[in-house]
Image 1 (cartoon, rainbow, N blue to C red):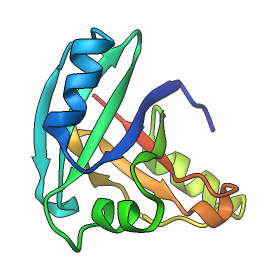
Image 2 (tube, rainbow, N blue to C red; image 1 turned 180 degrees about the vertical axis):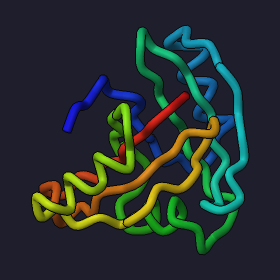
Image 3 (cartoon, rainbow, N blue to C red; image 1 turned 60 degrees about the vertical axis):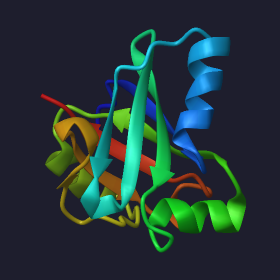
Length: 134
């Protein structure tokens, strides 16, 4: 499997607007945009840093995965995403190597990316996302 780069680092936050103040006003990062991903019950904001991005995630539903993550672990890094050239091939290769996948098939995430998550039990506790972008 070929990993092209770290695509983004996902950070779970309770309040996107308050969190953006730190990243924009203190760190000087520019907001690329925000988007609501209904399927995942989340509002996301992307802040480019070099050739990668910080993805801030605020739950839009108290039963959403980000809300549950924050309830269990608090705010903070929720996942790391790796860019791959062909997500279907990457999923198949990981499954053949015994990696447990949350997503057996890719789905669409923020920014129109095809995404799939590896289960943290197969990745030493880290939620790993695969991301393929046009």
